[in-house]
Picture (tube, rainbow, N blue to C red):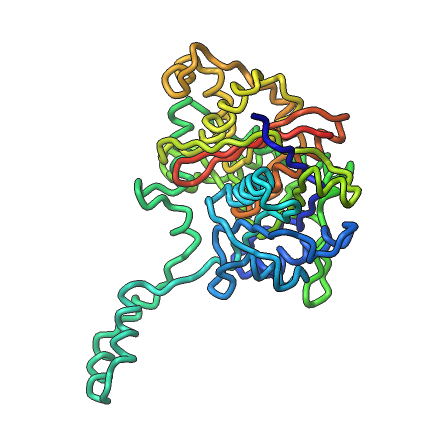
Length: 427
């Protein structure tokens, strides 16, 4: 039985703003509301006509726990439009789209605003357990003598903060951070530092060309409280070169590693939304969709090899639709690390990997890199964890429309050893 169509009517995102070791100018909800308002303002229906709002977020602040509901209310959707939040690490924004798609296909919704956001520059700084225990005893103390005794046990080292972002990017099961899993892939597939740096340089070059050609029309500019205008992604390095990148030191394995800040995605703040609709809503409001989401897939694998998640998620979709890698017109694979994208390409081209890990009889082939991330990716644009899964789906549709239509795949690796993928086509 064929499922009802799910259309992507429109989408918008904020500029992606690079974290610069200080809290960025916008909270996560501010980013989501700004992009959502820009998107909803150009629709032929009022925000309260939405059936629900779903927002992915990997690191919400304490006062934005259900940030989906907060954004919905602040965007004027009204009290009666449900708003909720999903979290699937790097694919939180894609999970929001998948959840919206499921509700539309089940007939529970006709119009859904779905996307993702994160303000990683504002990730929490935490007290250590020792400091928390000391404070607990301090506030429980009932006399000056008890507090005096506690002061003798206080040590300045207890004030050293625990960096929440580092905790969040470290897998608690295997004890490796995401950069270390990227190093694992470099070793497994023999990927050199030069290959990584070349890939990173190309990402910046492609994004530079795309910016100059006006290829990021989905960006809705932001204005800060001080009047500063933020109109473009600000992590782009137009002067990027293999020679410059080669001067950077490895971050995750300082002695023998190959993964650097330059060939990794950027820590970033940003939001991205897509408006999804049923056929009934398209007809009711006379909407003109960008395209539709044809299929989606989630997969899991060894967390220490998490960067290969796109291979495990996209391959079943290709098989269901009888497609080869290069039968698609465009691909977006989120660039968590240069080596991670290169490893995905190597895995598909490896007969051993395809047989042993994917259950295929032979290698799937070599992905034509001219179809991959044609306008650059997270290395140049940035990776606000909760938003990236939505961004790559939205931009993929814009790329396909620019090329005259067709089908494409958006895929993303997920911390914890998972992968997500979506097949889309223009209409």
